Length: 591
Picture 1 (cartoon, one colour):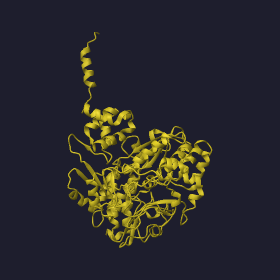
Picture 2 (cartoon, rainbow, N blue to C red):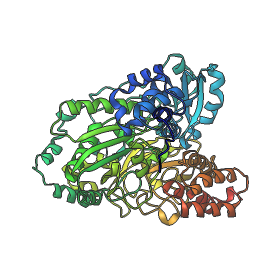
Picture 3 (tube, rainbow, N blue to C red):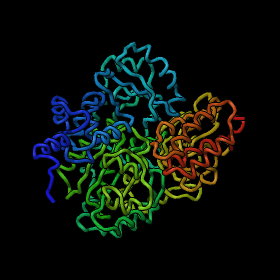
Picture 4 (cartoon, rainbow, N blue to C red):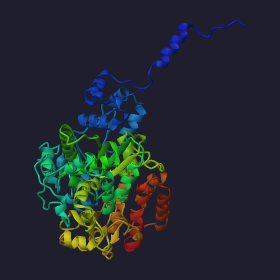
């Protein structure tokens, strides 16, 4: 049979040429040059997508679509993937074409503490007072400065105890970045046991002095880690000290730290570490309080854990709202790496982008990898298959912060504290209607009444204790009559609550518990990653129902059941806690 040519060689060449041409919008030369200037050699690493988006967002105050196209080309990623990551995080604003971009974005925190202190009044008055269409005023979920409420952030400059005059002055004077703190402080957290950590008064500074690298070394810092690295202290003995101390994860889950070290230690190399300083739980600010005063105590704890467990690389995930702490930590990491006391593992600092869900460990890992922060299904657990598919030790900042003191002072030091048959120290972030809010380094198991009376100077004048949130937005709501429950792991579950990160928010008789519940439900609605329907739809529907004068209890309970039973992660599972607590403990408010 004679062969018949279907196409000539020229026809084939033309077909290949047409198929090889990229479809969709093409990157222009100017945008490519601008992107290349900012990201440099980082284009080769897929996991640095979010870091690259931050560089563009910082430089141009928004993410222009032309830059996203250029970034996709430079990183060899599909445009759809770049776009879906950019639009997932709240601190990125994608603009099209020549759409205008605000000169300054002014965020006013509308979390519970700030709302109690007058945030809604600020939001209502500021646009007219500023009178500048190029300053965009928007509400923002809790920014982790509840003891300084209300707080507004002018670009990256926090205005503490904000008033309209203070905010207007900051805008007028061009205060848009947080000033760098001095690095010559002395800070000994162990000496603050059973005391308040946070300063008091309206004259608090935005950037408190901290213990810098040279000062920390001069005060004996990194000596313990050096002994462990050099084999002068046995790794197994360190694990046993951690186990004996009773230290549990202080990010909220409360998993025993020593046991976690042992589990990951037994996994095959290479192993990684992911450190959670996202601290997005409303009402929580303890990690920031310690970090911005004493960063190297945390870094030494990280290095001790890395050596004992056998970690090859450490990734620190810091929430984007902590601009001053990030700049300081970047500087101190450079000092440590330039003059290390011993050989260091790889340490990289990663910047969050405004997503509460990234406080969940697997969502944080997705974000570190440069993806949308969506929780993973488990098993496998991240101790076995975590960051970049490797066994991963995940820790909260404060858990690592106490490692040095526990090892040096002995496990008995930490476990010697406690009340009501509980053991250890807890850093309670207390805010709301108390005279002296702040971080209180108190005995584990202290009650809310003891915390208010002994550590907070009592209730604010004119306010009588009415109720409290013992564990942030997701930890439930209890009435003042239940003021004798030990605030610790495993003590609050029988009442439909939990301690979580120990974010204690107190409200008085002039406030309504239902308003507290609605505030946190709006927060959950805003922060749901949208991956699972029960959480995405349930929080939105619940928020609408909770605005009614009289609650549809049957429908709300149906929603609560579905969210608890079918949500992928803890956000959707814990979101119904405020609903059920109001129905059980404050029924008079919603009948």
